[in-house]
Image 1 (cartoon, rainbow, N blue to C red):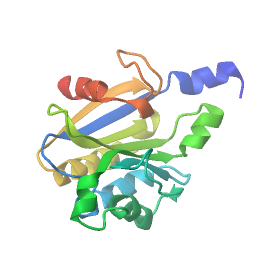
Image 2 (spheres, rainbow, N blue to C red):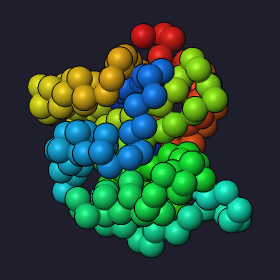
Image 3 (cartoon, one colour):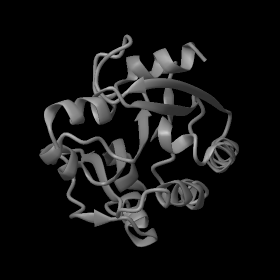
Image 4 (cartoon, rainbow, N blue to C red):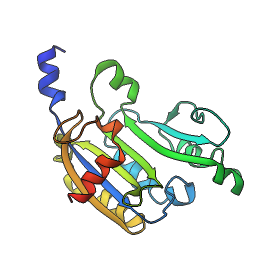
Length: 201
């Protein structure tokens, strides 16, 4: 693909970015809570014709770096894996810090190699020390795909909102790359940018 075609097709492609946020202690990173979201997230992931992959960033007190999960292709088993592994007992729960879990279709390696953003991107986030944000789910879909499946996507996202306690739904249209007051690419969205979406809803 030529540079000009790439710019026209991807650089300024608009994405709808939904934030389902709650300041309640929902603990969405635990399977007992996340399993209520999984069928709806699975439905959104199925919009993409390519396989999705999961990456989860978690750490354990006393260990350096992030915990290992291996390469996780999209499946119920691997969703149970990132929500359960290392959490064998109550003491393990207390020692583990959850940062975020991202779901990409195609995966992040494809984006790194080609510069082409994904068809579907979701992120479970947790900012336990930010009382204005708390935790929630980000759903990102190109606007061109959304316009073809509007009713299905809207219905599914509202089901997710109902499954997250005391949650608020916000949406913004932006590009994958920085712009429009957002300093980061979507995969690097931070708490300030999430707050910007939530407060402007």
